Length: 444
Image (tube, rainbow, N blue to C red):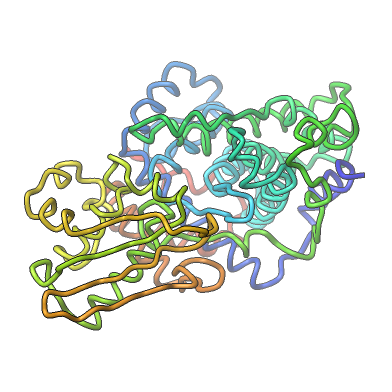
C-alpha cells in the first residue's frame, strides 16, 4: 500500500499541474540550490569531487557545474551534490532533518540532461523528489532517527530516486522497482559529526544520495525483477527501524501538502543554528547603531544539541565568531564567513571574549537562539525570535533570493553569465530542453 501509493505518485509527476505557490517555491529552491552548487565548487569539497569525476567520469552525459566537465549521470550527480552541501548555503527541511535540495536537484539535473527533459517536467520532478524524500525521512523518525546515529541522508536518496524516475517517465511498476533499489542503496551514519573540517557532510547529505538515487532509478528502468513492497511489511525498510518509524507519514497528505513549501531557504551562508542569532544582531545593529567597543556582553542561549554545533572550529559554524565579524564589519558575506584567517584576528578575538554561548535548559532542538546584548552604557536588549528569515513562516522575497544567489555565483561565473543563468532558472518552464543550461553552468 505505501510503496504502491508512492510509486503511482511518482509515475504521475509529468501530468500533475503545480499550484502557483508550489511552482514559485520550486523556482526559488532551484535558484538557491544552483547558487549553492556554484559557490560550493570553490570550497574544500570541490577539488576532491572534481578529481573523482576526472578519474571515473564515464559516459559524457551530464554537466558538472562550475567546471569544464561532462560526466556520467551518477558521477555528475555525486559531484554537484557534494558542491551543493560543501557550504551551509543550501536549503533544509526541519520536519525530516534533511537538506533536500542538495540531493534532489543534482539528480534531477543529471537525468534531465540524459533525457533531454523540458523545463516544466524538470520542475515537477523536483517537487516530486521533495515530496517523497522528506516524507520517507519523517516516516523513519526524522530527528529521532538521527539521534540514534542513523542519518537522514536516507531521505535524500529517495528524493533523488523519485525525481530521476519521474524524468525517466517510468510507470508505477518501474517506480516501485526504483524504490526497492533505493532501499538497498540507502545508508548513512552520523559519524560525519566527528569530521572537524565539516567536509564529509557534503558527501553524506548531497553527493551520496544524489548518486545512489540516480543509480536506483536506472536500475528500476531495467525491469530487473524486485520485491514490490520494500517499504512496508516484514522484512521492510520501516520494520527494520521499528522503534523510530511511523510508516503512515510516508504518504500523509501526499499530493495535497507539498513539502517544498515547508522547506527553508537560508538567508545567511552559515549553519542553521546561527541563522536566528544573525537575524537578531542585524536587527539590533539597525536599531541601535553600536560598535564592537560599545559591547559589554552578549549572551546567546540555545538547545543543548545546537550549542555543540555552534562551538565548531569551522568559521561559518562558530556562532561567537560570526556575531563578532557581523558587528565589526556591519554584516557578513560568503567570503567573510569562510575566511579562516579571521578566526585569529585580534579584534575579532577581543569581541569573542565577551560573547557567551550557553545551553537553554528544556529547550526543544528546533527552538531558536535567544540573544541578550548588554552595552557599556548599561542598555540591555533581548531578542527571542519565533521565526527565522527564510523559513516558510517568514519566507525570503524573490529579490532577496536573487541578491543571495548573485553574490554566491558572480565570483565564480562572472556577472554577465550569472545574470543570464538567473534569468533562465526563473523561466525554467519555458525551456524545451534543460541541456540548454549547460553553457551557462560551465566554466570555459
